[in-house]
Structures are given as C-alpha cells and as structure tokens.
Image (cartoon, rainbow, N blue to C red; front, side):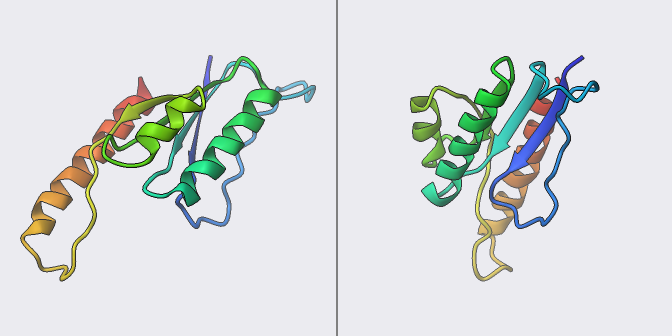
Length: 122
C-alpha cells in the first residue's frame, strides 16, 4: 500500500511534518508517493525541487511528482530536473476583488482543486 504525501511549498503552514518512516524504524519507506505543488516563481519551485532531490536520496523507490500550471515557470523547470509534472488549471484573484475577471478565476480555481484531488486520489 502506498502512502500519499502532499507538500505545498507555497504555503505558510507551520506544521508540515508527515511521518514516512517504516514501521520498524529502519529508514524511509520506498513505496511512498510524494506530490509537490508549487509555482509561479523560482522562489517556490527551486526549493521544492531541492527537497524532492533530498527525498529521492532517502527513498530511491519513492514516486515523486509535481502538479502545476502549464502557463507558469514550473512547467519548464520541473521536467528539466527529471520529475513528472501534471497540469492543473489555475488563475489569480484580480483587484478589485469585485471584478468580473474573478468569476472566471473562481471557476478555474475550483476546477484546479478538483483536478488536484483527482490526481491525489487515483
């Protein structure tokens, strides 16, 4: 059975710890699946790739992949570092918030959430 781990490198959540140690305590499980979501700027993407590289050394059999936008920097950077990236629709929230542009943005954000959940649960 595979464990699923999600790492949101754009989040400010204080506690992101997930135990991926084997039950016997002898190291990290190889059958773990880790999904990163990060994007927009290199300030989020490069640290996520560095963490993915470190995790790959700890658990060579781990399945590591990314989800992100086709229109952003992550779409080009992640595959050049040897990781799979899956597309999700996304859009920014525009100012003023009571803008007609945000109707489309909210739809795309909801669709992106559902797409990400589908990737995680399959």
